[in-house]
Image 1 (cartoon, one colour):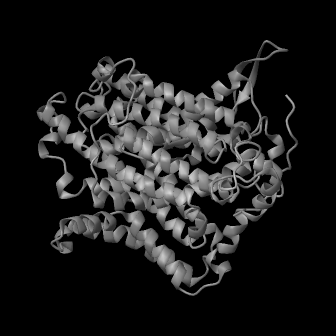
Image 2 (cartoon, rainbow, N blue to C red):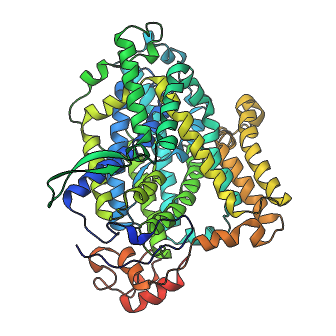
Image 3 (tube, helix red, strand yellow):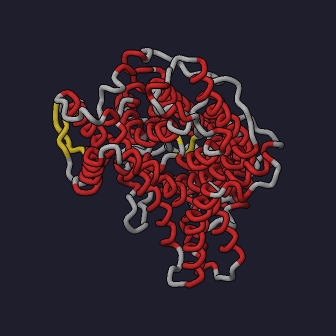
Length: 567
């Protein structure tokens, strides 16, 4: 298949776009699309499974693995829908959508309010009857509250995206705001990770060791795998298996080890580390179950939940803009123009709305780890991610798949959390590479923001009565916001960075702007980021659409618009 020539990426250490086997506009063979689509699904598996399992305890579901499997299947299904929407109508880059950790912290803060704390009897497995109406209402009313908050907050994200407001906001958001915000997504979750790992530290450390071994020490060692070609029917090729699936391989090996220790009765005193305690989930789960909107009932809305989730929405939007540019660079595409970024953020808001309606207990965002997988496979075609979206849909319909992941032993999950949360924290701190960290101003802004993001939520959780104003709704809003570390740290970073005097070079804004490089291939940008089938450029033209911030311009006008609208 003939593919267009691509300019080499001249950034140090960056991948050469000319080495791409298939670019964003190419269509690989169908079998390659399916294989790589499954690979992208497996790459995102850790994050997709982790989010429902983190929320399970605060939803009173720690002793109901069957419902946990329903949540996992639902997040698979909705992530597939959102991926298809994003690639077809949104940013139009090969970027996967899935559950976001940015919503976890505000969700846990909301569920920690006195009105939503789980009753004591739900923590005792002997007292929990998962089929009783009383227990069903306990967890469903919490999910409905999360649904309502996510759906309202997603409307704010759609407004910011489709109105073009995201471009205006990005002028004031620099590395010193992003670094504490993203770092504090994961730092407050250390308690959840340590509690799960502490069930059996031996198994947790084994999981950590395997992830570190595969992802760091063996990542550059290729593994021969059998392949099939047209000229040479059966042959072998080298595949960097450990680099692509480090978490999945470690998870499966630790899982099998727990199964072997359970069969040999080595773990008789640790029921939470055994695999047979949740074994009946596989037999109880249906083979086919199609998730649908409102499956847990009619969503409810509270101001406290909405304001908390909006803090997560802001963090998710900032991270997604960075993912768009990273994805474009890896697949050899021009930097995304403003109308494409506006549309991508707006479609992510629509995805969060769908996630809230379906009842995943979470939203959706662009997956950074799958952006990295594009650089590994050297296949940047959007058809591959469309195939991955279809795989997610199918996995969400097969009930046994979600049930299988719900049987993962608790210490294995805890070990995975320790690694994943550490990486998320490091990703946040890595934004400081653009900032002059020899400046006492920048040291103060970052250090004070991130420390307050840990200290203030800790104090509020221990002294909730100190914030009582007598107005219940106001008290709940204040408590949720002040117990969400990413909001506290991000707000202080934003306020201090924009009020304390400092040059653009010192603040890292110049280097931050250079990352969003201008594109010289305006016609190609219009081809990649425009609507499918020439809509808005050759067909469905209207004088009104030129004023829409998310609509690509006609071919004659679009080239100038694309050059002027680069971030």
